[in-house]
Amino acid sequence: MISRLLAIAISCLLGNLLLGTLSTAAPVNGTLGVELILLPVSSEEKISPVDVQFGGNLSLHLRVGDFSVSSLSAFTFKGVEFQAFGISAQLGPALVRDTLVFSTNLVEIEQQRNIAGLPVYCVSLSNPALPNETDLTLPLDIGLPACPVTSDNDLAAASLYSFIEGDTSLSTISGFVHPIFTNLMFARIFEGAGHLDQPLSLRKKIVELEIMLGVFHVAAQGLFANVGSVDMPIWDKGFLITLGMQLDELLVRSETWVGSKPGVECFAECGPIQRFHNGVLALGALEGRLSIHGFRIADILFGAQVEFGFDSSSFQLHIIELTQQWAMVPRIFNVFSTVRIGKLTITSIQVLSQSIVTQLLIGNVSATAVFNIWPKTDGAINGIRFYWNRLITIFSPPGVRLASDIQVCQDPSMCGTLPAVLTHDLHFTTVVGDVTVDIFIGFNSFVMEFRQAAIDVAWRLGNTVLQSTTVVNGNALILQMFGLALQF
Image 1 (cartoon, rainbow, N blue to C red):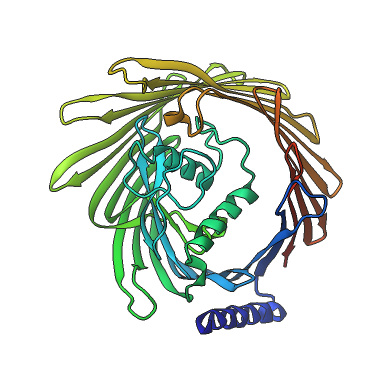
Image 2 (cartoon, helix red, strand yellow; image 1 turned 180 degrees about the horizontal axis):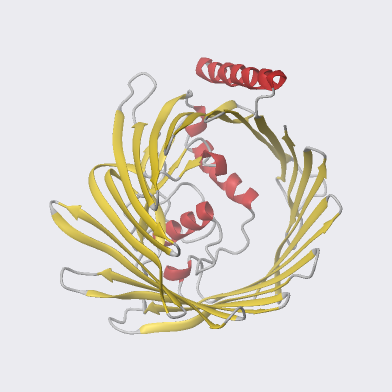
């Protein structure tokens, strides 16, 4: 409790210092956002008890010349659960950043690849401990999938990737999951595991150096994480070295991970501001990535990325991704293709999957179709399955946006949902003066079964935005949120 009060005091002090510089015309800005969520307990009663969740965040930034200071806080009924301080300075061509993160917990989520070569997420370290989620239903319930990703938890790992990264517009189908439900899901998991009852302590330090020299980019990153406790801190460390070069469209990049791997570190409830995509620690690990994008031949753009690692001094190929993009009819019809190649055994390398995205643009109307080629997962040793996966149609005249999103899944191990699912989602967005309205209606079995509907309203009054979200299903109101965002 004392540590949380100390974090509040430090944040308030920094806020006073930042706001106090207004009189000297220093460039200070910040945002304060709060949300109150009401969740009816029962959908069968006219008068139902209601669960209430309150949360908010405060962001403060001060910039003086080439020097900047920032503070980011997240708080709930329990007080401050997350506090980050950042300092950065521009020294000629070099940019130096230092970040300190205080939190009640530390959860490291590593990126791996599933059988189709698609990125998925699993928990490589959690302090305190977290239950392993292997349930094949959505959303995630009691915990998060633990590493490594296997046939027992690959669906949960695909779902976790979708929840953190948002709609990947490729193959993941999890029905309609409003961002509010994603945040509630994480809050319930971490609350149930006792993560939010721990004292606030220094959990992470990130030191970064970036240098731009003409077309060359050099960056070094040091990750330091406290995997112990408040009384007995244990610090692990890892590093990332990045080299890059860009010539017009051509971008060449290499990444070397030492004692770390690609992934996301989550703190507190793993909300959007509590996620850091700097990578996760992995003692003894040595991995690399080589990529080239924007290589043009005629009217076709080519790209390639190779991910590899070293295990017991032996080379391990993780994945090769080959991309192509071309305009078959300039500014009207475009095609995007991604081929994923993996090493299944010591001597076997084969194509794991291919995704083809076609896009048609005519005036205010666009249509995007996604086709996927997967290996068979029904016991057959050889063979592939080719099917149409998604069709997105958008009509966007001035001031209005209408969208239809039809998704089909035939293979649960690839799509992250139950088999033979057909969903049809309709979106309507319009802006009237200072008011923005976003309406969502979701169906199963095309339009035969109503699933959910949501209405998001945002009303801007000067530097203040009032927000409201209402979510209903076929039986009752299931969520009501009132929010406020203040910019200063």
